[in-house]
Every structure is written in C-alpha cells, then in structure tokens.
Amino acid sequence: MKLDDAPATLEGSAEQSLYEVRKKIYPRAVGGWFAAWRWALVWLTQIVFYGGPWLVWNDRQAVLFDIAHRKFYIFGLVFWPQDIIYLTVLLIISALSLFLFTAVAGRLWCGYACPQTVYTEIFLWIERKIEGDRNARIRLDAEKNTSLRKIGLKGSKHAVWVALSLWTGFTFVGYFTPVRELLSNTLSFSFGPWETFWILFYGFATYGNAGWMREQVCKYMCPYARFQSAMFDKDTLIITYDRERGEPRGIKGKKYIELKALKQAGDCVDCEICVQVCPTGIDIREGLQYECIGCAACIDGCNQVMDKLGRPRGLIRYSTTNAMEKKFTRREMLKRSYRPRVLVYTSILGAIVIAAAATLYLRVPLKVDVIRDRAAISREVEGGLIENLYQLQIINVDERARAYSISVSGLPTIHVWGEGTVGLPGTGTVMVPVKVRVEAGSAKPGTHRIEFKVSAIGAEGVSVTEDAVFIVR
Image (cartoon, rainbow, N blue to C red; front, side, top):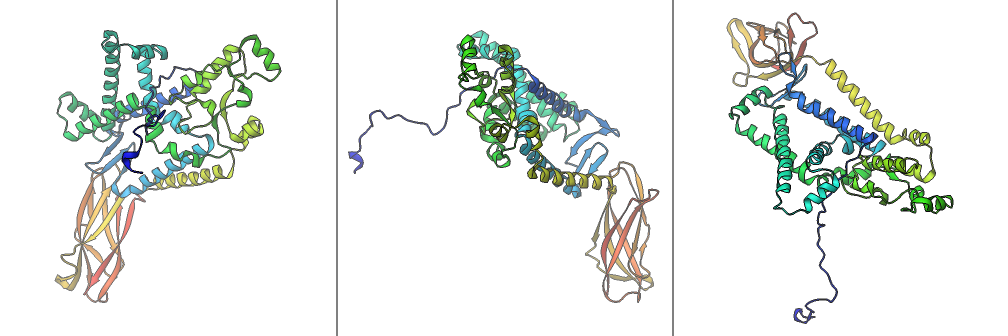
C-alpha cells in the first residue's frame, strides 16, 4: 500500500505517551511504632553525619579524608594509599550486609537508613510545618500561582530547603577539608574553587533529590529497586496485605457485623490511608511492588484505622509469602529465617569482619618501601668494598613521633654504611638514601637476596622487614 493511500487518521484512535506523566504525591503524616523507628534512625544518622567533622581526636579532626596529603584519619587510625585493601574490605562488608538484610527482611536499608529516605523525610517534615498536612498542601497547589499566600509559603519552604541543602554540602566537604578551616574560609568568602564546587554540587543534589524528585529516585534511578527481587525468597519478611482477612473491603457499620459472621465482609474499609501515607504512592493491597521501599508507613496507618474501628491490628504487616500461604505462626515464620542463604551470608560476613578487625588490631604502625637507585647499580668503593645504593621510604603510621633504626642482613659482612637511624614526626614520611656495603670476595658475582629491617627504637614489636636485591659484579 502506498503511503498516500493510508488513512490520515483512525476513528477512535488515541495517542499514548511512551513515558508516564508524573503525578505528584502528597504523603500523609503518620505515627506509630515503625514511624518512631524511622525517625530514630533519621536522628542517629544526621547526628553522626553533621557532628562527625566537629569531633576532635589527638588535637586534630577525628574524621578527615585528607586527599591532598593522602592521609585518611578515622579517630585513632591513620590510613595511607597503601591501605586500599581496607577500603575494599569495607565495600565487601557493606555489600554482604545489604544482601543479608535483604534476604531476611527486604528493603530495610531503603526504608529506614538510605540517605534518600532520610532526607526526603526531613524535607517532608519541613514542608508539613510550613504548608500543612496532605489536604492543606493539595489545596495550596490548586491555588493560582499569583496568590501572595502561595508565593509566601512556597518561598519560605524553598528557602529552608536551600539553607539545609547548603549546610549539608558544607558538612560533606568538611570531611575532606578541615571543617574549622572551611568555616573560617566560608565566613570570609575565601575558600577555593573545589570547595565551592562541591558544596554547591552536593547541596544541589540534596535539594533536587529530596525536595523535587523524591520517589522518582527510588523508582527509576536506584538500581537496587530492580535487582532486589533476586535476593528475595518465599521466607523473606516483606510488607504484606492479608487479602483473606481484608476482602471484600469497604463494608462498615452494622452491615459489617452481620456479613462478617457469614464471612462475607473483610476488615479493610477501603479508606486508602495505606495509599495516602505511602511515600512512593503505591497501593500495597495490590501485592508487593518494586516501588515499595519497605518503610512500613502503611502498617502504621492501617493499625491506627483498625484501632479506631476496634478491629485487630495486622491487616497490613511484616510477613512472608510462605507464612501467608501456609498460615504459619509468628514463631514458625521467624524460625525459617535460619535458612541456608541467611546462614551462608552470616558466616561469610562474620568471617570477613573478624579477619578485618584482627588485621587492624595487629596492624604495625610503620610502612617501608625499598627502591633501588638505578643510576648506580653496583660499584667498588674505597677499601675494596662493594656498594649498592637504595632509597627507603619510611612512613610513620602512628601519631607519635618515633626514631627508627635501619639494618640489613642476608650476606656475610653486609652492613649499612653511615648513619643507621632516622627520626620522624607523627604520621610523617621520609625518603632515606641508604648505602649498603659488603667486603669484596664475600659474595659471588650476581644477584643476592637481602632483607632490610626498620625498627622503632624503644617500641618493641614495631618493625618491618622488606626484601631487596644486592648486586655483585
């Protein structure tokens, strides 16, 4: 058929967008046991985040990632670029913890401690305080944009959001630049371009994600929402709606009592509180959906309604697929938490944590690297001695000043020529040129394995041995 022969339009046809138009969600405030836990974690995480840079340890910032000087200070520990293995271990522990928590109880991280959830909760609290609860916010948004009341309330809300976002960006940068120095530079408008960029960037990200995008981050930007189902099984605790108890829904008053006796009425009154309190706007009664972040706001909301109606709590509750299908008791349900997947995750995680803790405890506060001087590989010096030159990089990982002795072994008559001690301040580093000599004839021509030993003077057990090669021509 030719293009010209095709009908211009089809009667009754309609255009359909490839992308769903976002419908703004107005989460309703809710109280309850899970809401209290959520706010407890909001307080805990924010006290740690905002307070961390201001803690002092050994006359310095307790937590400081000093990238410029390649030193990470975490309370009494100092990490260097050579300690990258600890970062790897930390990432592995974080991943395994996420797998374990998800296998046991679903998206606990998302619902209670994820920064997106935490800051969305804070921004929503500010919004409620300024604009009012759900219905008031809906009415305000329906007003004309030229309304002075709307402009005033919206302007006040965004001003507070921006201030909080900038303070969040400032705090974030305070972990990488000494926070007191950063505050002084901020007050005098004299901080550098990188500090300015990261404060504005992190502040903008906080403002955009928590103030505007909200549930869109959880639904479309976070990859965890997409692969979480791979970590679920039928014994994973998830937020569930008891369909057998709740259906048919929407029946109230005396009619409910009569039909309930005949098992023709459910406890759900179709009030949609569970939908109104949900931060992602889903209806949990339609079953588990990937948009559910496991915050349990719907449980608190439904329990409040059940209390008012005098009906048992738990119409929406934490449960498992097996428990719902096979009518497990709470004890039976929790007992099945000890299944192979959980035990394997726990065992591996426990072993890695114990190994990492032991390594940190036994960590020697000294690092040594040996570098050969390639300009003078081997030479004969006065007295018929054979000399090799090396550069020793010595790093004092401890925060106390120390003196170190340098010795060498591995060949007869081998010794360090010249001064064999070096002093270093706390967390200091130095490159030390070292001359190593042997008597001519005490070693055959060729390469020989030797060992440098650097020991802290007056600190037993603080020593490092490094291999090197001595060349005789």
